[in-house]
Image (cartoon, rainbow, N blue to C red; front, side):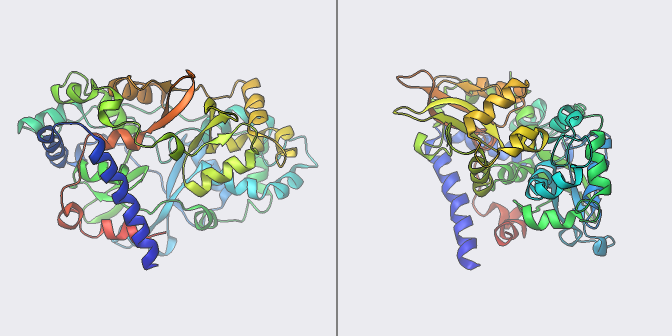
Amino acid sequence: MAMRQESKSQSYDAYFEMVRSRKKIPQSLQDSLTAAFAGIPVSSFPLVPGGKVVEILADTSIGDTVKVLSELNILSAPVVDPGAIDTIDWRKKYLGILDYSNIILWVLRNGEIAAAALSASSAAAVGVGTGAVGALGALALGASGPLAVAGVTAAAVGAAVAGGVVAEKGMGKDASTAADKLGEDFYKVMLHEEPFKSTPVRAILKSYKEAPFIAVGQESSMLCVMLLLSKYRLRSVPVVESGNPSIKNYITQSAVIQGLKRCKGRDWFDLISSLPLSELGLPFMSPDQVVSVGDNELILEAFKKMKDKQIGGVPVIQEGATRTILGNISICDMRFLLLKPDLFNCSRTLTVKEFMTTIAGIGEGHSLITCKPDSTLATVIDMLASKAVHRIYVTGGNENDELLGVITLRDVISCFINEPLNFFDDFFGFSAQELLNQE
């Protein structure tokens, strides 16, 4: 355990040290920005749509959980330990976050059982009817964690830099709904057939928990949140009220990027965002460090690689002398193995190229979002926010589509902050160490 903790800590430190060494932002500006974010309270962040975070009890069945999430049009929810509902310690109350990507992974693992459950009906395959393609597809896409389309307000950082009021409220907007409902056949299996109707969501959390559950208080700073979302690789950060263990809000990587986009016109933002990627050291990873898949690799191996590396998507590279990028697949594309009978039936021999061709044929393929080395950071932020994607590939070289690197939400957030010495020890107590102690 000690070696694993040390390895994780070294990984976090190595990433942020790389970022620090490559950024060419004046130190005085970087220090001012870091201090500004340290002065913005988390309480200034707009609430999730509806103002309340939906929670799921750990002993709720997978079928009932799917029904709740779909009816409320949300992609995920925190899971509560029924035996700790009355505790005042959020670390004991919450077991983790359950999202649709984890449900898809679990259903796929139990795919043969699901297929058998549907074999006597007219349903398509593996627990999901063909009528659910659009609905479940919409549900499966997007960031993990309840959506909160809001972020650091334009006025907040500017005011903090100037030494004035540090936060401005009311900048949030309602997130778009994920889907209206799931397909009838999906409900039939998830609610009435085994193993779905009796398996609790606790079982999925045990198998597919990919990140520790770390919450911040409303009095914490946006700098703390941004460090968790960048250096410490969390995709979302729950917010709890002091003296009350219930989750009051969520702050996601995507939400912060949305907020940064709104900062256009501020001197500090324009000074940094107007720089070309190369002057910011972006992309931080060299081409050979980017996790990718070849177009002739098996699609199941591609999904396994994403799960093992704990990444949400990979570029698809044409096998040959140059690393020509052909497209992108995400972990949520795994849902098509459930939705398309032909894909599932040949999944063990299906190549990435064949998979991409099939989903493109039904209008579900991903548009490849790319930029060039001389693109500005502002351009990248705008594309990440407007396209609602989590990564942008940098292309160029002798071949116009040669993969040179990838820029993630994490990378962009890291451009704007440093970590003050002993920051978590001094300002955030237990959380940094707890982050390292969890699997």
